[in-house]
Image (cartoon, rainbow, N blue to C red):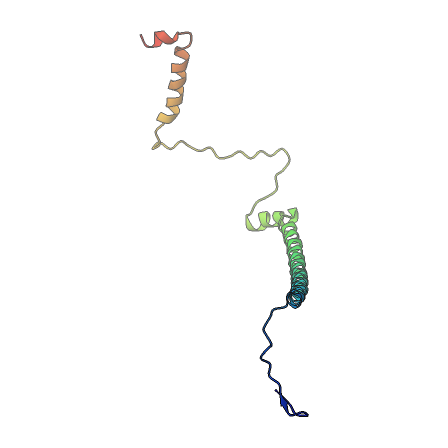
Length: 146
């Protein structure tokens, strides 16, 4: 460097690079405080975005709930119309050809004849098992194996 007024050239040969601990600690405190502020702002913005997201989700769920309630009301109305006694009577008389019972009228079910192709061995097996149980009553356990 040159001093142009006195025309003397100044040399910086005597300057050494020394780390000042005071300046370094002040710089470190400044950086840490800026990082903490940035972290707090980042956390605040994340919390706000979560609140907005939850708000949209709850609004969507409320609309779904309202639609489901409308569907439920429609299904209840449809069930009531399908199970009304007047409608059932109309279908029974018109479509199925049924008539209403008269007082003291008894309707007996048709008597089914036994199919001769089915063996009755299973029905007989139960009665034979009962006979065996009844015949062993009163006997001692040892007498059964003698």
